[in-house]
Every structure is written in structure tokens, then in C-alpha cells.
Image (cartoon, rainbow, N blue to C red):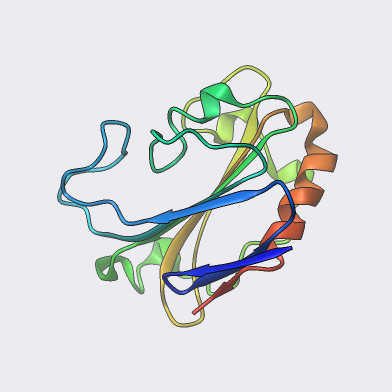
Length: 158
């Protein structure tokens, strides 16, 4: 395990996983999702495969390259204006996950064979997050979700 900490998020990643933390600016990359004036704080990507350099906030440009055993986990933090809103009212992290939580219709753009989920919550300190997870194969969800939960169980949010 390799511990990585950035922008108030700490995670212990298994061998072979990688992480990328960033903040989208007003001059967002072409694949970024959202309005240019939207305020985001932290966007974190965790994957068990090499992520392409150019990708959108929710994995556009990356999910199209995923293989059957690939996983993409996104933690997308929204700005202070979202604190306390109904969408982010849960202060319980949405993990551990179950394979039945995943479905192709839960993806922003369904791709053949893939499954995903999206959950909104706030950290105990009130930081509003979206957890977005894509599995390379919905048919292999049991094994892949076990790996996802292994990673999610190590995350701490300051």
C-alpha cells in the first residue's frame, strides 16, 4: 500500500493503482464537465490502470479506454455554495458498496459492458462530494466492487 494525501484527502492505494488530484480552473480542459463559472474544490481520480493524461472530471476520455478488469473512482468536491443543500445532506460516506449498486444506466454515458454508480454526500466537516465509480465490466462486479471497497475503506476526508 502507498499512502497518498493531497487537498485534505488521504488514501492508501494497493500496488498497481494510481491517483491524481487537481482543481479545475476557469480555463478547464476540453473534456471537463460543468459550467466554466462552476466552483470546484478538489477532484481526485483513483484507478487500477494507467490513466490517460487528458480526461474529464468524471473520466471522459478515460472510460472509453477501460478494459474488463479496470476501475475508475472519482471523488468530486463541489464548492461552498453546495454546503448544506439537500443533495449533499447525507454525512455518511456511501461505502462500502454492493455489486447491486452498479448499473449501466448509472453512468453519465453508458458504454457497452460497463457499470457505474454516483452517490452524493458531505464529509463530517461539511465538504460536499460526489462519489462516481466506473467498472470496466458489470458482469465482473462482485470482484471489482471488492477492490473498490478495499480502496474506499482507506479514504479519510479532512
